[in-house]
Image 1 (cartoon, rainbow, N blue to C red):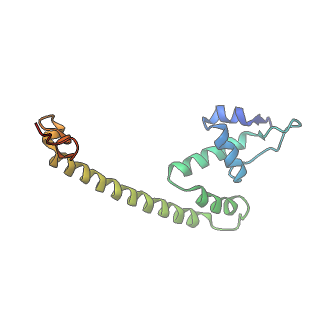
Image 2: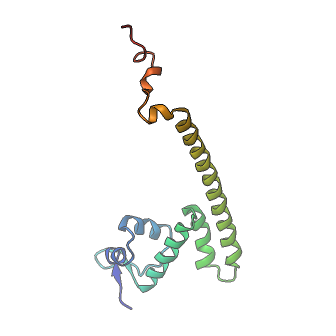
Length: 139
């Protein structure tokens, strides 16, 4: 089977070389070894690995979660992988829900600020009026 360098893998997947190096170091990508010159080599299977890693990252799994799952997937073929992946996805869902709650709170603060300072935001008043150094100047 033909091999490719990490640069070629990067071009084919759109994933930066630096990220691919990290993924390989973490054991996420099947490797075909190294060239005589020391270059990392990959075969077509690496394309599938990068797709899986990219998908898992897009679903919100952390590198630590993926590191925990990878040996189960690659080396412990007798284990049930699906439930472990489902648990990791549940954790990712929880993180997303917490982030959404934080974003909703921020939107509420933005709305309250806009309501409280509508005149200033419309240019009918000056924010600086409340600044003790810039506000009401003796005339």
